[in-house]
Image 1 (cartoon, helix red, strand yellow):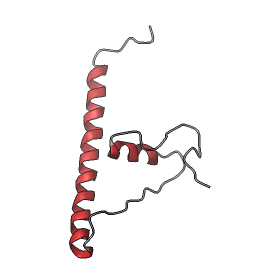
Image 2: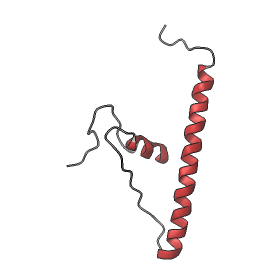
Image 3: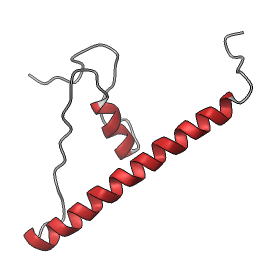
Length: 84
């Protein structure tokens, strides 16, 4: 019974996916525009982007979303991605 979905739940999930993709697209557009302007000034093709935030605030999830793959491990446990 755990797999039963309420009416319209699939549509809600699709809307959430569309919002996530829209947000990803907007952020990537900003980053690409910045990289283009930076490349014109510094004659470089790449930029470094840092993600800063509190513990378990979704930094790794943002990176994974932007890269469209599991580039960073994620967990509900704290300090999973902390480096020493």
